[in-house]
Length: 305
Image (tube, rainbow, N blue to C red):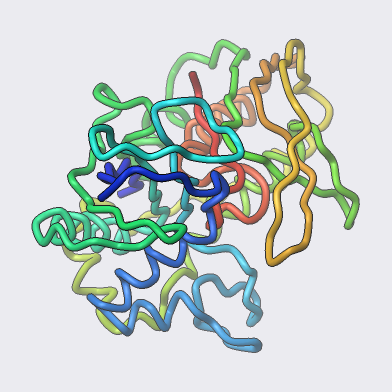
């Protein structure tokens, strides 16, 4: 299962915290994981040279995690400060790209809501009050499977419309050969989405309880990898035709990263029977995998409006 779970939190008291809490939310998630399954926590913390960490390709850790974390959101649009009121809830999001991890996260969230134990974010206490995975109830929530994405888009008899629009809700960081690119170029987005799609076969292989959780999943063992031909198609046949974007800067361990937020619409200029279908599948995959780098620290939150 691919999972996008929106988690609702109740502030314990009035106050204000810095709005940039991506790293804090990742620390909260990892702390919860360690409490429940230290083997999974270790699998999500590969050391240099490990080949069985969160994602290993060709014997090297790729640095891609099988989950994303959003920032903390309030009722008002994001400002420099997030103002808290015990009478209103805030929310954040965890997504999972690994079927076993998705099942684990669902049980983890059920336990946390039932326990109602506080966690501290930005020096303020919060209580988890619920979570949502139904897209019809919350636009950032959702769940599907790799099998369903393949069936719905790759195996569809009709070609996609060739038009799509994306929302980049948090600073989105893209680069090309060590050069920052503060614009959502189709080929750079597709390259990141492909890496995460193809990373499925290698994630969390040293998690001792992986098979136990995988048995609870409704995902099959079949896997269709994305081919590099899609990159050339994205570069030559897909273009942006309307955008409303803002340059956005965020920091990661005190290092500034330049990215963008906003919306961008795209059009396929030359349709292809294979690559157009693959593009459609990965566009819908973006809700779960995010776009660009540092997505486990709040960067690159992406959805179709």
